[in-house]
Figure 1: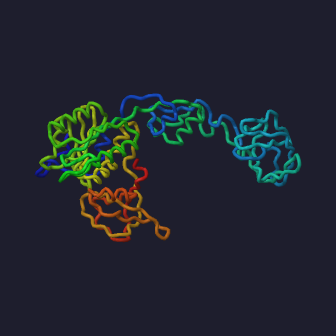
Figure 2 (figure 1 turned 120 degrees about the horizontal axis):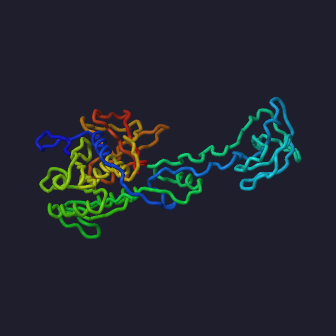
Figure 3 (figure 1 turned 135 degrees about the vertical axis):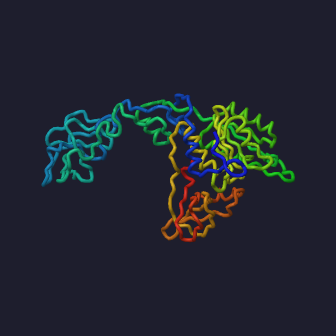
Length: 415
């Protein structure tokens, strides 16, 4: 499936929004799931709803340290004295009945004693020997957590497609469940292309550069929790590249490549993807990262990323990572959230493309501002390390003056 034709190269570019819409509209969640212990579920995606087998909390209990009393004994316009007849601790309840004129000392989490319906916090009650004096103004049911208040038996505690984080682990444990069903891990293969690429650990020959892209992608994919297949560096030879593509497609759900997607004499990736499978598009109106191919070979999704190191990260974060999450079973947001802040420096900007500048968000005089993080060349990877956000300038945005408001996309949350 092609995106359309125009221009001398026979292929038109598309907007960033259209590229994202095409990708997320096409990819679908993997089949296959497994049961894992809850600690092993951290960072995984639920394959089925987690249903509460019991009420949470399991019983009416006290939300505060204080005294369990009967609301019928309290006065609306004056103090009342109640006799303390026992204690209820968390895990060790009071076995008797709270009768008229009585109270039970209770700790946070303690089961509500029979007959009591209200908690008077200890800071309000005044102790007088074996009795307490309760002032007016206490409401019936105050400071009581009801059984099933958090979750009622049979309710969906966590929906299918939920990413399991620390809070979700605790919630599952609170239900007494030892295992959950999760989608199988996404398997991603990747390789770099280019005769100029050298492996780390040996001196560079004239014209060579060290391959950083595989290490960048390894870090991003490992953080995402994928099963990773690093296929190394593949030279710019059509036969060798075709073999690499076939091997990668045979062993992975998704294949990522870097380099070789432009229109140079040694750029073979798009043509190979198109011959072996299909290409949905290969140019996006963005900077950096305009040449990026998306398609599939058989049942395996393919992303041909640019070769420049910063462009690799920009296209990965803007288009690939959410596709990987959806394939893995998560429903991604239609768009990544943006925050609007003041830009402290002027920026030159061409129209008709979306630009992603590396930015540094900082606080000045109680106000959050942003500035470009160093030189913005697509090969300057250091700028990504120094940045903590992208400055996102839309297609219709012109030059930015110092003091103008701009959109930023925080690195935290990009996964």
